[in-house]
Length: 284
Image 1: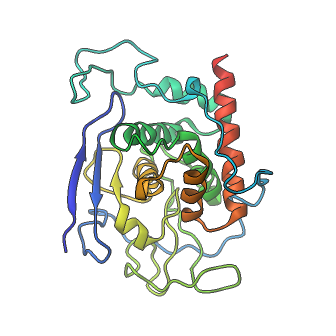
Image 2 (image 1 turned 120 degrees about the vertical axis):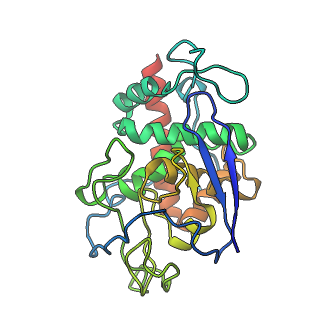
């Protein structure tokens, strides 16, 4: 059954968002048009989260700290440009998160290209799911744990938002510490026709990507390897079910739905809390 194609109006300077709301089992339309089938990568011991200490926080007790001064501001870096429109009447310059991303990258060590994706995803949800209140810092925490912001296994995050080589996780074959998930995509996204593997900078299982796949860079495709697409898809996934990601209950429920591990959530918490504080400090 074909899915419903919905277009999000551009918010200020963020990239145009095209969301594909797709039923599980829908064929063809959710795939990346023209993308080659990736080669399944070998199992690697280079796990991005290994060297991250979990925060000493009780699950459900609080959400990571937020500081409005550190939030992406689509109009805060450059004056309005009458030639660029949000689609809602306000005039904004294209690329106005660039200065925010560069400043925040200096403070946090997160690549500016990745920060642009996380920031645009927050802005998209701020307009279209305002009750969710998902933050760029939480998305950055997930991105660090999952792929070191698109640099997993020694690859680099390029300016087009794609890693220099596809990021594909270990086979989910029931090995110790690994879930068993048989193939759901014919190997088209993960290169493995026997078992699913998590794909892209935000490490989506193919069946989950198929349900929430989103186009975050406005090119008409939803590609799990492209960080703008992956970040806004992750934001939509976290916001599912009407969650409030700024509240303790909603934040922990969202992160545990991403990976049902207390240690994982504590690692994301520490990273998100730290990124937000570092970014706020850069504004002082």
